[in-house]
Image (cartoon, helix red, strand yellow):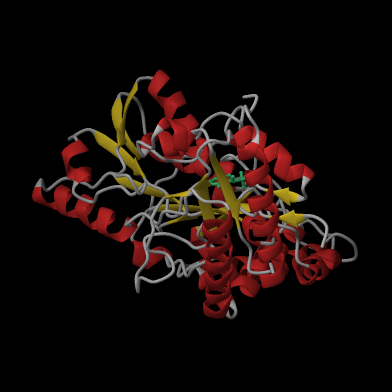
Length: 396
Ligand code: PMP
């Protein structure tokens, strides 16, 4: 067992079955889905079947699914496409991924006012805080489903309900609600219409699908302004020749992830328990960041896949590099944060103490990991932590 990959929130390997499903659409069935001839029609059929399959797994309708290049594009498309003309008010949780927080920051430099919804010490948005921050000119609220650094699961349907009740009391149209569900889709059941959001973003490479494809699900009737122009494809909302093979890969990966999802989730919980038990016994003291009800609660507020843990006394960047040498891949946070060895903005928003912040690492699991692999990873981590802690002084 050489290299143990515990950075599945950054990306995952493509499943062989997904590659096999995609391959014909890169070779023999290569037509442009907009072409009228048989080759084009074959490609169109595969594309629309992929859209239908994705929609069915997400509790949406096929015309509500727009294929994008990934979640970054999907988030940008939703935020720029829904905000309307400035000035106006935008609201987002303080723990959004940079592909949400950065477009919002761009909008705020262009005349929008941006407010952040604070999170509690577990990284959760208190439902009651939403109405305190809403204003008559609020255009858009953005709250993610599962956090990329802590796995915290936000109470999206309760927040949407608060939003709609608030608007109904004022006989006003409710602001739009965008949800970045990138770290939840393929791991837990996600039902677009039950969540009640207007738009939802996802990305295939987070659940063993190909890189370069994601989707934005847009509630029927939502007036979404396109970000790009130049073609009629995807109702003109996201023009350009659709990448059929990638769409087939996305649908196949989600199909695979949704089959036996309960069993896979139970396996990831076991991996998590085994991993933490070893670290608690052999790398103490450790501090677990994020919700702590993930293995026992009936309705947990976090995903078991993400384990954000601090090793007080050991700087995270030093530990990360030593773990890489020991054959364990993990991260200090989002790979999309500029300078990803900097302290995590998510943990900062949670008010985590300085020492805990500076020694925090994110280990993210996949159901494909085996129990022996996770035990071996925990052994290596505990050994490296003990070695680093026993040094007289650790260079920062
Ligand atoms: N949102 C979240 C929560 C993510 O974790 C990521 C990937 N790090 C993204 C959006 C961006 O996804 P993509 O790589 O598909 O652009």
